[in-house]
Structure formats: structure tokens, C-alpha cells
Length: 231
Image (cartoon, rainbow, N blue to C red; front, top):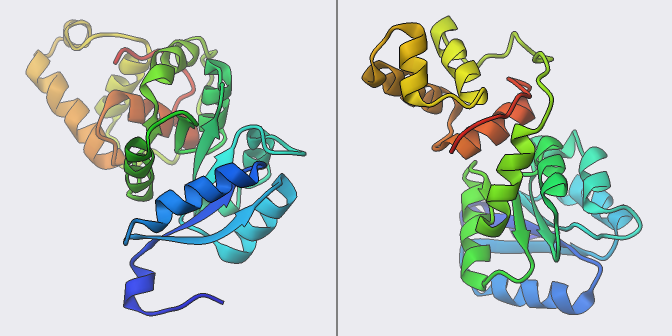
């Protein structure tokens, strides 16, 4: 169906899913200018999106939040198995903070507004393909506020702690409670430098690089759903 070989295999394989043909064509044109990208296909509705995700198994799915007949949130909710191999970036004309958080909870790795520049789009795809998370700057503050407002729940998968030590889990809980490094150091009777060491270890073990990513990752992995975190 598609060419094989080292050159093609090394590319980021992308599926475009949007209800508007002109927008799909625009995305395809932008992506085709990048040597490290390969567009596997296009979908005009959610049914076709789910079918092509299963058939093509893309590395990255660019998914319209307002995709008919099911919106992007519903597509994510029905894509649990596919999300193990495909990383999703939600594209939205007007996503609110609750939609952003819901998309991240359901496994999306990025949320972008459709008005962003081509440069930002390309950066976000590469970041997500490498295992990172991406939330547009305009949506970040609102998403953090919405994350803080989530009710505190016990992790549904406490056995999967990614090698975190008991102390690191305590530090992680403190971060979710919105405590600063100084507050954490005072609470545990340790130095701020030791707190920084623990946080650095948490980042290394989870593969995250900043506190926002840690919030999103923890929600997706069920580490802790109390995302009251300062960034």
C-alpha cells in the first residue's frame, strides 16, 4: 500500500482527519514540504477516522475537534486500543479549557488551535512524535486552572508507579496539591536541593521534562487525578 524501506520507515506517518476538504488540503500541502513526514491518508468524518486509524496505524493523528458525526472527544473515547500506537493532536477552532482537559484525559498528546502558524504545527507534531505533550500557549493557563479544579481521586492503577520510590510518590502528591519546592522541603524536613533532586528523578523516570507534562502524563496513566499543580 505504501513504500517501505529505511527512508520511509524513519518518517513520521501522519493521518489527517478534518471535515473540511480545503483544510485537509492545506495541512497535506504543509506536511508534504517536510522530508521527515509522510501523510498516509485523509478522513472526512469520524467513522472513516476510526477505520483508517486501525488500518494504517499512523504515528500521529491530526484530529478535528468538531469532526462529524462524532466530535474529537468521542473519537478519542472509542480509540483506546489505537492510542497505544498512535499519538493524537487535537485541532480546534475554539476549544475551551474543559474540552482541552477532557481530550488530554482521554489520551490526546496535544491540543492546537487551527489559527497557529505552520511553524508551530510542525514543531508540535515532531514533539508529540517524540513522546512529548503539546498545549498551545493560549490554552495552557485555562487548562491548568481546569486541571486544578478536578476532584481528587485515588489512582486506579497504583501498582504502575514507573519505578518511583515511596519518597518520590510523596513528592509527586505534594506537587499535585500545589505546594512549592520550599513548602515541600519544610513539610518533609529536607533541603530544597533534595526536593529538586527528587523532582528531577521523577521527570527522568516518567520521561517528562516539565510540570505541565507531568500533570498530563499522570492523568493519562492514572498516577493521580488531583492535578492541582503550580507551573
